[in-house]
Length: 316
Image (cartoon, rainbow, N blue to C red; front, top):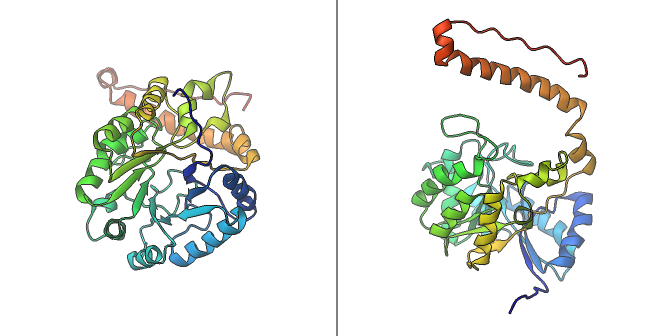
C-alpha cells in the first residue's frame, strides 16, 4: 500500500481562542476533525474547573454536537491542586498544560520558574502529582526564554535546552506522570523521544514544522505568517522530524497547533513604528553586550581601551 486517507482525524493540539473568534474558528475545526484537544491559554486563561466548564460550553456551542472537544487546565504558580482534581473528576479536564512564563502567546500567567515543576512542596509540583495519580496527561511547551543560570537563550536553541536540561529532571522526579511534549521541532527532541517515548511519554508534531524549514521564512524577504513558536528550524531538523514520523511510533501524534492571530497585527509588527522603537532599544542593548564581550577579550585587556559610537541612520 502506497497511500491511505484518514476521513476524520483527531487534532491533538488546537487553539480555538474565544468569543467571536471561536465562533468562526470552531466550525472550521469541526468540519475537519471528529475531536480535538483545546489549549487553555486564552486572554482569560482556563485556570479553574468553573472556567473550564464555561469554556467547554462555548466550544460545544461553536462546534456542534457531532464534535468532541477535550480541555486542559492552565498550570500556574497559584494553581489549586484540589480544584484541578475536581475538574478531572467531573471530566472537565483531561490534564493540564505547562507554559513557561513569557514564552508564547498568552503565557504571562505561566510558570515563572521551571524548577518549581521538579521541586517538592510547590503547587506546580503537586499539580503534576495530581495528574499522575489520576492517569491524566501533562502537556509541555518545551521551551524556556532563560537558562537555569539566568542567561537568555537563542530562539533556535530553546527547545534543545529544554530537552537537555529539563526533561530528564521531570522524568526522574515524576516517574509515574504522563508527559506530552508539544509541537516538537528539533533534532534533540527527536533523539530524546526515540530513546524514551512510550506509554508515559508522547509528543505531537505540526504539519507546519514538517512542511517548512527556516529557509522558507527568509526566502525573498521575511514571511511573518511562517513565524511560530517554537520557530521553524534548519533543514537538518526538518529532515529528522520527517524521518521520525515515518517510523510509525504509537506515541507520536498530529497536532496542528492551529492558532489564529489578527492578520493586521501579525503583519504590521514586522515593520511598525513600535517595532522601530523597540529596535532602537535593542541596538543599545546589543552595543552594551558587544562592548562587554570586547572589553573582556584578551586583545582589549592588553590595550585597556575601547571606543565605539553609533550614529542614528538618517532614514530612521
